[in-house]
Amino acid sequence: MKTYFLHEINHLEDDVLTHNSLMEQEHQWWSAQQELQKRGQRVLIVNQIILEIASRGRKFFYHEEVACSPKRYKVAQLVDKNGKIYYKAEYGKKELICLDVPYFGTPNGWLHGSTLLALVKEFRDYIITGEFACNTLHKQDGSKETTPFSGLYSQHWAYPESDMEAIRNKAKGLGYLK
Image 1 (tube, one colour):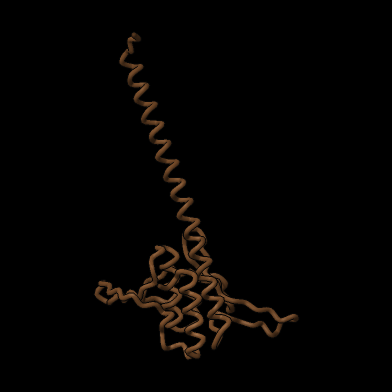
Image 2 (cartoon, rainbow, N blue to C red):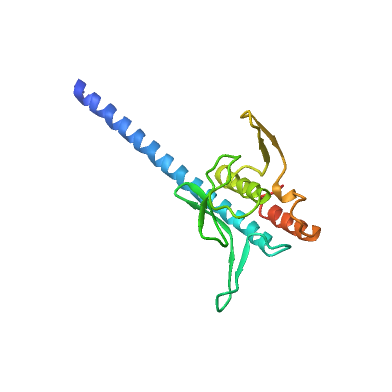
């Protein structure tokens, strides 16, 4: 039977603690990598919905540069960069618009109206949280009221109903809407 001295036992305990700490760090790293992959998938889902919106009705999020030869076409998209979600504009002087703004605020460089801004913020929240699209009403007193409603059900786009239905079906097919 081997006799351990006190300093050897302390050293063994340190090795076990170091091993457990390394295992925990590795687990956290893998969890972070998996979350980044999921977040990247959600960015792709949202950008496919934006592409569908840009290809129908009034072609929101779409821009055709007619002064160029040959013509260039641009569609807006959301970008996950350095942990923040940016709106990559289809036109305008500012290419990346940070969406990290208060709910009552408008991002610097935003070129669309409040209905599309609410939709893009909804997309941003979905990318960050992965939660089903809901309409969260942020009241002036700081409280929140959440209803299961998406901006994709808005009646204020002036898109034909057939186009709105196609956009919603695309979103449902991608798992964005239920």
